Length: 162
Image (cartoon, rainbow, N blue to C red; front, side):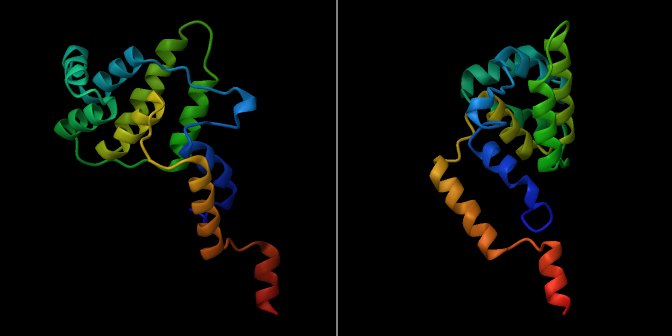
């Protein structure tokens, strides 16, 4: 990701600390558990009642999503850019039928994702990504990744050609 799209590093940092943008921008998805239960049910084809019962038993909606999607599909693949753009779309959705439109975006994203990807998408939307790392640890890790895999800019490429 660093080599292919270094411009996404700020977005990746915010994503890893469960934000869409710096706090002062006040951008949030405003998604609740009920909406996520409906979206998981829609993406998996399993009733909301069963999804909710599983959530009450396990206490981790991301894990529940992974399990129900594993029962109905095996493959899927979404890019970071697709996930981040979907979250931005959700954060900008308001007005009449906003909840239904947000649910449609989430269900669509979960439908495209693998079961494991879906687990982390739901955990992010719940606000509990469970990385175990703090802001400074993530920033340090991204900085090290950039140093070890520096993106090539046009000026670097031009210098290398001479």
